[in-house]
Image (cartoon, rainbow, N blue to C red; front, side, top):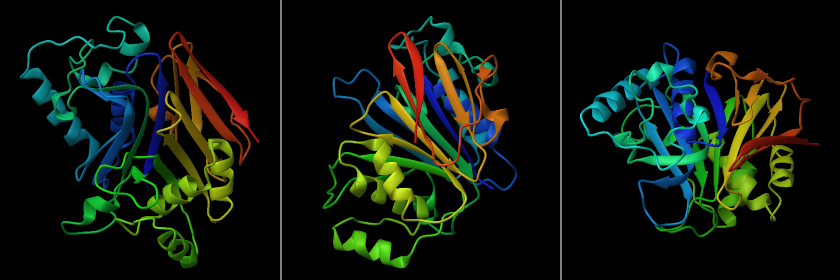
Length: 281
């Protein structure tokens, strides 16, 4: 069974999502990945959705990042380098506290992130295409089209083949047969400047017991989650809110939040001086 995690932070969400992936990983998980809305390094380019996936377990990936990082000089984070919220959840990273450079991720930093770990969705050179997070670049996408929607999911999703055919007719391009990619396109085609309604509309077109995490290019500093007949655990502090399919993946020291009803969308907003959340029916 796969696992997912979502993070919103006043510091760099990357560190907490990496540790969450390590806590979620199980024997038999051969793929992991994450997506961050932010920047890589000190580029002047506007923030966008950056995805990294690996055809390996989360523990092996983190070990590679540690080894790569320790081989490089000290670099402070451009995001709240001394913030206690930023350091929260780093205990498993063996000396990465206070560092941003994670060289295998090109200095990636941002205040909202999603992560996924799970078994392989296939074999051979194309297997990584099945791994999550999955993306939608919108209709008529080309090589330089920005990512518009990023999705992780946990559970089972059933969709009619007619939905895929309808999306192809609307010029959406599929790179996999993964249900999460289908859902990302459904959310994109349903989004008319209202991400909450887009989630409701898209999930209304599919069946299954599932929890879903979503990031939108056009709604920076926000992360969304919704569950349907599957548990999703959340906890918060003034500077960090995390939710996950398994409570062990949540950073230590946070206050547990009550479970929210099936079908309601949790919207988490990372402000510069705090993290807030609200539920949408």
